[in-house]
Length: 106
Image (tube, helix red, strand yellow):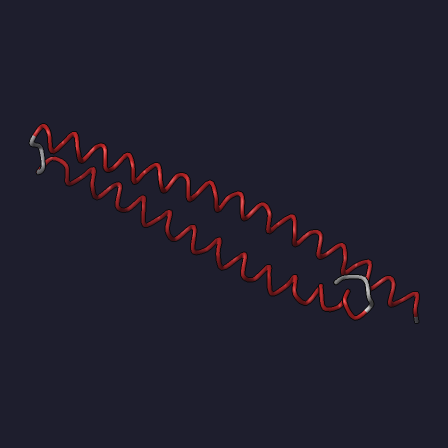
């Protein structure tokens, strides 16, 4: 009985470590997506500034649309990452609760 509880605690601890590693990877990927989004915003602003100086507003539309679509794609990826992290937090919460019951996690 206590041996089975210890084994369940060990398995729960391993699952928690796996979840932590996954969360860390998602955080890193999320950071990279945010950096990419900031870079694209700066790129778009610089491009618009240069186009305004040349007076090519009409020819700027396709580039603007491309940048807006890329920005939307990045926003969707960030939202998906946030949803995955929330799922991991819920999953990790259950693992912590199991370890807490056994006195193995604070």
